[in-house]
Image 1 (cartoon, rainbow, N blue to C red):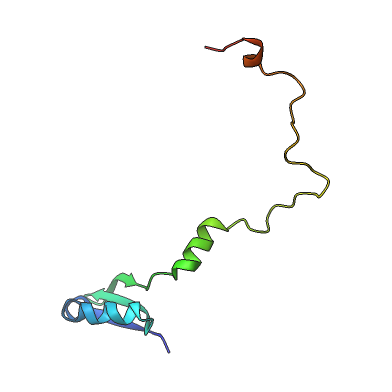
Image 2 (cartoon, rainbow, N blue to C red):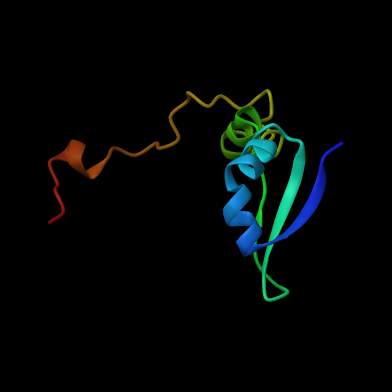
Length: 90
């Protein structure tokens, strides 16, 4: 069962690689590093790659509803574009 470990900076320096391995294997949920009794850093394992991708590329999933009768390929502009008429803006 993953847990939280509090460790002082000196001990962290000595055990850094082991602690990082335990975080990576999900045997630790987080590590609080202290200096003179005060927390100075919190280490957590990275999110699972699949979850990170879904968070970035699917965060609005289900948030937009397009009615079935709406044709997204139908033109929305009835008037010709200025460029089609030879009018350029500069």
